[in-house]
Picture 1 (spheres, rainbow, N blue to C red):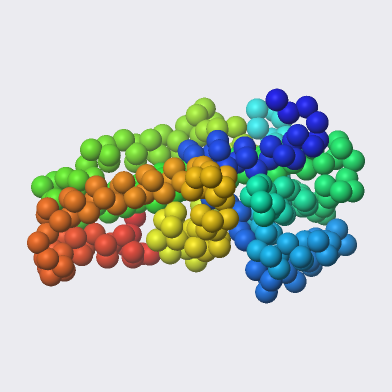
Picture 2 (cartoon, one colour; picture 1 turned 45 degrees about the horizontal axis):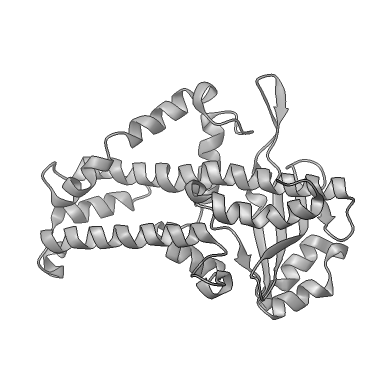
Length: 300
């Protein structure tokens, strides 16, 4: 149970690290020394030499959710609702590997951003900042971590599969059992937004699609793989391991186990269906599927 600002601070990252599996919360980015000017400028006078020192030792991280500056406040069910756009700066203890939030920048897409410091904010203000950061993490987890990664991209690949692969094609046979319900679910989510969408400040299906477009800008397909995400964020198992691998960031370990098991399963099916790489290259239906999926005009 969390009863004090100190306990809230201590529980902030473990809550993300342990309980966000369905939200795909691979979020912190290790700050490189070459990037410090960007963060110093963003946080202004609240930035401290201790944060520079943490970056020098590879112990400084940020969770950057400024993407929600694009969301305007909405009136939903008669009440105002907004998603805080936050940037959280965390410093890591080199022994325990614990990540402690030090600064939180909060904006709402309209008024001037406010920066809260663990050292200087009042207890009530600091707890508010942590709550704002948790809200933005939760909204990220629902719409970008979960729905974008596992509903939207997947549904697009399924639709192009239905359009290019025969029902007897080995790849479609592999994916068919998992492909019967996702597209209808997504259609229902968009059509019945007011009734079934989780309660956030995204008040319509159109706003949701606009957020998806913004998030997807300049993203490559394989950027969504957990291994690629970890590499881009500069995260390694050694940074979050004390006794067992990834024990200080358990959802990452779980996601990697799922990823590796899926890879083993798919590899076995591909080896069964195709004798050589040349057999893959000669599969015209497969090539048409990949081409359609990657075509910005023809892809679904």
